[in-house]
Structure formats: C-alpha cells, structure tokens
Length: 91
Image: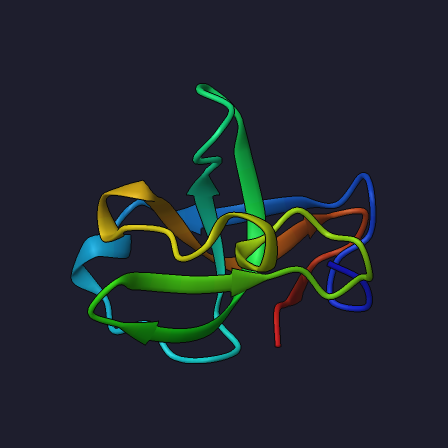
C-alpha cells in the first residue's frame, strides 16, 4: 500500500464497512478470498453489483487483479487513521 502505508504501520479501522458509503480511494480491510483467516489492507478502485474491486498501491500486489471483486460480506472495515509510527490521518 505504498505510498499511503508502509510495512509496520498500525491502523484504526471501523467495522461499519457494510453501513458506510465506499468510494474509490478508500482504504479497506478485506478477507482474503483464497486464504481463510487472512486479511488484506487495500484501496477501493470501484464498487459495482459484483462487489468491491480492491487494489494495492504496489506492483505485484495480491488484489482484485488476481482474484476478482470482493463481495460486500468480505469487507471487514474501513481504515481511517494510522496511529504508529506517528499519528496522521489517511488520505
């Protein structure tokens, strides 16, 4: 998720993902569709009837380009702040 996120960053995420309006650019936490129990942090590229298309900011990222859209039930939360290594809101 560079440049927005770096390895070791800690995030605050709201579990209200199913009740908020997602828009392109939002950073979300999703369940990996092929690895049960594994979660990913990705950026929303688009939402449609098939689900939410998510992509990482870096090349070679495990995202919708590899596994397709994430169904709404696969959304865990929406990230809204980074609290470590230093506080700053996500953009």
